[in-house]
Length: 443
Ligand code: HEM
Image (cartoon, rainbow, N blue to C red; front, side):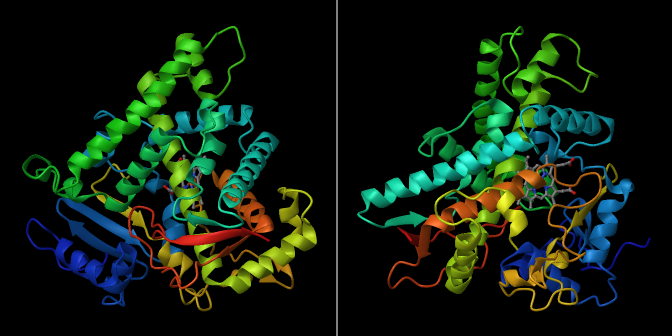
């Protein structure tokens, strides 16, 4: 009763075929949903589907999305093999847990990450150093290329972005040539292209994991998670071996291990596997998101060179060229445990034609009013409510410093004769830019 309007359900597949066909037509799940919703003008911001065994209700405009994120009834997170296969068949981590378990873990992580600078001054310094490293690495490439460097931009900042979080999580800074990390990030990228916000083929049709483990995405899902467990597990082990309980903890891993060793964990939600799952979640949440946002920022800038010039003029005016940008410069610049899954479609908020003028046009000036930054009330890319993003401040600091530090010193140009790179994203749980090259040269 009262299930929102949406495409017809057929036995076994539910409405999967309508979604698949709209997705093939539009290229992206969120565009497919938008397309389907236009057939149901009575939808009032929510539409419903059934894919295999999963019922899903999707909030598709700013009003319904905000209501969904603010309503504590919806603070639960889904159950099922997709969510638990990631963590040894158990419900672990912080991204996909709920109730008291999630509250305790979220509180612990935020509180102790702050001891290492998270959302504080220490984090700013870490990000500034990493931005300086980006400049140094580009300069080295330019010197090698006799004045310019050809750089593949998709994912170009992923290691630097991860470093800013991993220094606080695990006390580690990876070099850009670290092959293990590059491999892991490419696996993660592949995974995020093959799943979406509603899950994967094997989660909607669980028996497919036995009859078609590869086709249903199950085998790849398990293999990629095994690689990630191995990579992160090795770091936890190294911490365990080198941690001296009489010394100050070096990072969040130390604090967590210390809590476990001393048997003074606040509750039984703390365990070694939970530490691993938290690291896995932070690794995913902290790198995929910011990296892809930076990727799109640079893509739009390369496609709109006049915007690059405007940004550079502003950097010259406010920062000059004799020092690197700092965050202070920014101020001067302009579960559901029930069976239906509830999915928020941010596209409906971020690209709603009723709320934004020409929503798909790249126009950074839409965030200015009378020469000052003006954030419209409907703009919530980090969510709202209790699950709102933990890393908003970190992500924004990364985006600002990586972008300004790069554009302060370099021009990014399309190689001669190269077509303008497409801004049609590769779909996935988080959409990404397609691979393209730019020539980077000093200004
Ligand atoms: C541009 C970058 C980012 C964007 C757009 C973004 C967006 C979001 C959004 C919309 C949510 C809420 C999801 C929900 O309601 O369930 C979220 C949750 C979360 N984010 Fe981010 N995020 C970004 C960067 C980061 C970073 C850098 C970190 C790491 C520190 C991070 C850690 C998390 C965590 C742990 C959660 C889950 C919170 C919870 O369920 O309690 N995010 N993010």
